[in-house]
Amino acid sequence: MLVVMHRQATAEQIDAVVAAIRRMNLTAHPMPGATRTAIGITGNISAVDPRSLEVLPGVEELLRVTKPYKLASREMHAADTYVRLPLTPDPSPQRGEGRKTPPHPQPLSPEAGERGEEVVIGPGSFTLIAGPCSVENEEMILRTADFLVSKGVHLMRAGAFKPRSSPYSFQGMGLEGLDILARARQRTGIGVVTELMDTDNADAVEQAADIIQIGTRNMQNFSLLKRVARTSKPVLLKRGLSATLEEWLMAAEYVMAGGNYNVILCERGVRTFSDHSRNTLDLSVIPPVKHLSHLPILVDPSHGTGKRDYVPAMALAALAAGADGLLIEVHPDPDRALSDGAQSLDFAGFGRLLDSLRRLAEPLGRTIN
Ligand code: PEP
Ligand code: MN
Image (tube, rainbow, N blue to C red; front, side):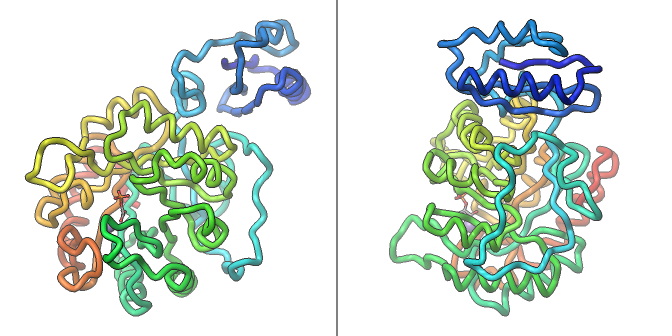
């Protein structure tokens, strides 16, 4: 259910509606918009009759949200969500010191966090998140961070915790890897995106990351989704290997229902009968995502194809198809990478792709950031 307030509704009237929703044992999600505020309602609404809200001062109308995902749907939130990240890194507190979590739930407001220079993920721009699959050592992370910064890329992705198909494969450097990422962030100013695999490491990953990645295999790990719902960092939610769009948006709903509205979807290929590529990159999911949801969507052409030669074509196609950016694997020496070297671009290859992306972005009216 969505309560749409009048344009002239006062802050007191909005607060009174929020209080009435809470008295019904439901959760209120105030969403200040450009011209009016709407208040989303989640929770079990079959037991109470929310129509009693209709009569409250300042309420214009009540709309039923028909989709099973509510906060993630365009029905409840018509305007596109922009995830904003401040560009100048605050000096990271040491692990364990604890960062204050925001008031809960946070307002679903694009204005939140608007101060100074920032990376904005959402329609109009095209955000590149690039880097090696894994943190392998400090030297290669610093080299990659320096290279990306020199190319105007603001966000680096590298995994300290790696979900590998084989228990005998490199599992990542763990907490030491997070420390390396934190140092690279401090030295170069690059934003850090890294994966959280389990709730045990949530505090440490939240501390080190500007965006927390939830991997494909954990898309329906509901304890993990509930945990990242309580972090102060945006969540990059990769699509499950065999997830339908509805299952994916329901996973996003878990994070949002817990109070974290900064969710970025990431299409990374699904499992089909095809065996010419590692996965089948489902670019056809982009228009329905945009139709049904207000959340930004990135595309990962590296895991989507599994072969570096196929990555540039799919990266350009993602831009043309309306994605909001890319998550792309780049390694200083892909042939010696400890994971996913075959699908990683080297620096020269990434540079060439960046030039092509810039050329294509211009006529499409998009800015690469
Ligand atoms: C990764 O991004 O390196 C990764 C493991 O991705 P996925 O969860 O999509 O397999
Ligand atoms: Mn990888």
